[in-house]
Image (cartoon, rainbow, N blue to C red; front, side):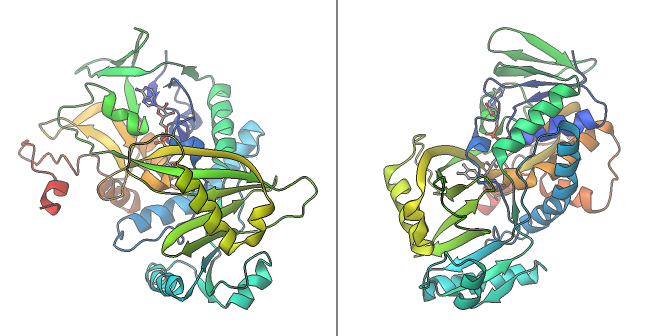
Amino acid sequence: MGDVIVVGAGVVGLTTAWELCCRGISVVVIDPAPAMGASRAAAGMLAPAGEVKFQQAALYPLMKASAAEYSEFVGRLEAAVGIAAGYRRSETLLVAADRADLAELEALQTVQEAQSMPVERMSTRAARALEPALSPRISGAVRAPGDHQIDPRRLATALQVGVEASGSTFVRDSVRSVSVASRGDHSVQTASGEAISAPAVVLAAGLGLADIAGCSSSLQLPLRPVYGDILRTQLPADAPQLLERTVRGVVNGAPVYLVPREDGEIVIGATSREDFRPAPSAGGVWRLLDDARRLVPGVADLEFVEALARARPGTPDDLPYVGQVRAPSGEPVRGLFVSTGHFRHGVLLAPLAARLVSSLIAGDLPATGADASHLAAMDPHRHSAVDSSGAVARSRHERSSR
Ligand SMILES: Cc1cc2nc3c(=O)[nH]c(=O)nc-3n(C[C@H](O)[C@H](O)[C@H](O)COP(=O)(O)OP(=O)(O)OC[C@H]3O[C@@H](n4cnc5c(N)ncnc54)[C@H](O)[C@@H]3O)c2cc1C
C-alpha cells in the first residue's frame, strides 16, 4: 500500500509524511481525526528566543535549528500546493506588566544572549512606538526579531493537500497495535480490524502513543498530558489591525501571549495545567483575557470566537523523543521510528524532526555533525536506556528524580 506508515496526523506526523513524499517515498497516514489533537490548539509561535526557559540548554539548539529551516520548508510546501500556510516573519515583543515581571524578562534575556539569540531591550516608549496598542503601564520590553509565527491550522491543511497530491493516502482509523517483523514488512492493526503493512513505520501519534501496543519492549516513553486553554478572537469587521507583532507577556509571573494573524484573528494563550480535565477551564479563560487586556487594553473590543483546550505531549526533560527504536539488545529495530513528545514546541520543531526521521528512513544521515547531535539529544530511549551490553538500564529520568 505504501513504503512507510505514519501513525498520527498532527503537525509532526503530517510534516514527516510530507518530507517523505518530497523524497519520492509513498506514505499511508493513519489517524481517526487528522490535525484535531494538540496541533488544533497551537498558537503557532516559532519562537526560539521567546520560548527560552531556565535550565533547558539541550532544547535551545533544536529550537534554533528548526526555526532556521522554516522559511525553506514553508516556501517549498506553498509552492507545491498553492495554499498559504499563514507564515509571518513579523517579530515578537516580550513585555513585562510590572517591575517584578521586568526582572524576570531581563533574567531570561541573559540566557537568550548567552545562546546567541537576537534580542534587544527596549523602553516602554520604544515598544509603544512599534505597537501603539500596548498599555502605557507596561514596565519594559525585549524585542525578538527572529521569533516568527505560522497558522498551524492552515499549515495542517496545506500538508494534507501536499501529501494527498503526492499520491499518498490517508486512512481514518485508530492504530491499536504494531507487529514488528524480523524480516519483511511490519504491520499495524487498526480499531476497525484492518491490518496495514509496510517496510517502515513512524509512530507520531503524540500522547496517543501510550495506547499503542507492541512498539518495543525496550521503549518506555513517560509522556504526560499538559493541558492548555487557548482562545481565538477576531477583530470586528471595520476595525484597524490591533497588533502587527506577536506580544508575549509576563503578568504577575504568569505567561500570556497575543498572536495576530493577517486575517484579523488574534490568538490569546495559553494556560498550563496537569489536572487531566480536557474541557477549557473558566478560570483559565478569565485569566487569559484579563492578563491580555492588561497588556493590550483593546482586547476588550475583540469578538470572541473560540475557547479550546488540548493536551501537550510533555516529557520529563521537555525534549521530544525522535529517532529509531532499538530492541532490548540495543540493536536498531529495522524500519521502526518514533517522533513524539514535542511538548510546547511541536509546531516549531516539526521541520527538524521530520527531516531527521525521513533522512533516517532514507539512510542518508551523516553519523556525525549537527544532525547527529540533535538526534542524540532527542534519543527516544533516554528514559528507558538500553546499554551497550544489551541490558535495559535504569533511566536517566529515574536517576535524576531521586
Ligand atoms: C494551547 C497550546 C498552545 C500551543 N502553542 C504552540 C506554539 O505556539 N508553538 C509550538 O511550536 N507549539 C505549540 N504547542 C505545542 C504543539 O501543539 C504540540 O507540540 C504539537 O501539536 C504536537 O504535535 P503532534 O503531531 O505530535 O501531536 P498531535 O497534534 O496531538 O497529533 C497526534 C495525532 O495522533 C493521532 N493519534 C493518536 N492516537 C492514535 C492512534 N492510536 N492511531 C492513529 N492516530 C492516533 C491523533 O488523533 C492526533 O491527530 C501548543 C500546544 C497547546 C496545547
